[in-house]
Image 1 (cartoon, rainbow, N blue to C red):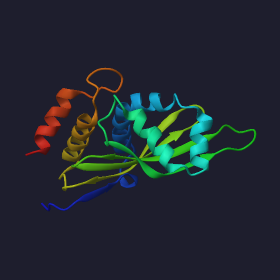
Image 2: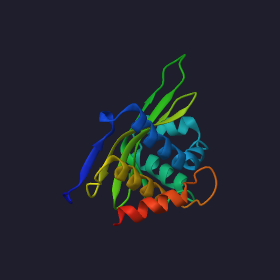
Image 3: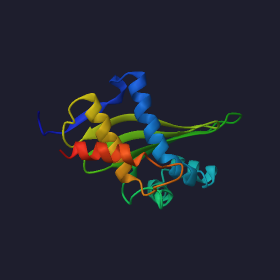
Length: 169
């Protein structure tokens, strides 16, 4: 087994595998998303359209406060917005979850009817091994990045602690 980093491209995974990862990530992000949605949609889209990346990054950082550890979630440097007369606006923001063991690359998609998470890939600092170990490491990283023990963003601490213990061995 090599100690080199390993990228897991989610486009090559099954729909069920991808859904499992995306649901867990979305569960963690729920309080952050709720906080981010308090910002005026016009302001958010304005930041995107006028490429005000520093303001968008600041809005994202401030929306994580009290929900995620500082620096755990950051703006990925790319965003897009679709606005056309007679149509509902849509925005996509590229984000990164950064941890010493793993970086997750994903999009947060704001549509008029939903907010979705589209996970692109995971970069592990060390090759996790099999699929189950990869999942355990992912769950442990999510649990470690959360500052909430209760509430809608809560991660199952017992399962995450077990995953963390296994990933450190």
